[in-house]
Image (spheres, rainbow, N blue to C red):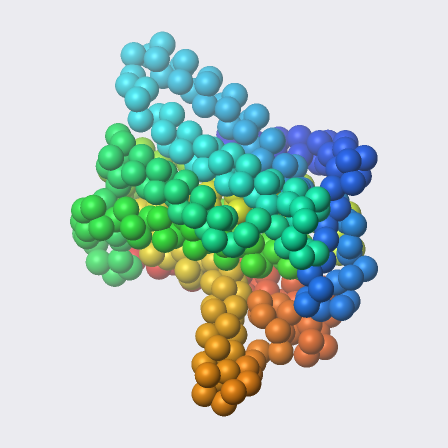
Length: 349
């Protein structure tokens, strides 16, 4: 655990150093956020703020985790221990982060330089199709690879339930769903970062506890430093994303972090707890779905669309109620901490 905490601190320092050059690079290439016209008017002052800030998180995580993994593989091989399963423990979440980060980068570039409506990126159906394809590949690797993930852990039931091939569509849904959920949460300065850092820390603790209990069908101890490395990088990003933000995460970071969080949850076996631990992103997504569904229903029923919330996602609703941006972020974070505590407690049942 001491090594994992050290790596998390190192990730923070590396990301903080990498931050200012990245911001200058993004400004030099005029990669600034375009604000959606239908969004809150108070957000218009944020137009032009450098986006694709997810690179500030992804790069340090890849560098540090890559070096640690190579050293671990060499050490294990010299000691005569099997190495086939060691790499997968971190390679799968690393590949997930890079793959979804690249997709998010394309979306961010389309947002900045595309020819569509101001503030929009790739067409939704194209982005969703790519997300689903990536998630399917990742799910199949986890299911048919050395880990052979097939089970679901239910709090209060000692024995995990094997659901076989049905695990794959659940995994795909989790990866796609939470990559989009974090993306919807990324609407206020510091909100998505502080919520996801809390969630990764919670799963780092869960993986650490499991390393003593032997719950999963494989060793999860390497997930502990990975989670803390991600936490360190996100905290460094928050240094520049705190209100008023100098840098936005963008889809580059939101899609990558959300998908990777889902993969970590799947690998610990405690993926059923993710909607609790990541309660805020789930609530943000639910409000969007409810808003769209209610609007369509009332338009068919009454001839005009009506809204359940002042604006979705949920943080926009509270903005229009008069809450300040800082109040929303801090109060949502308190909810996120509480939810993470509940999730960790349930994982011990």
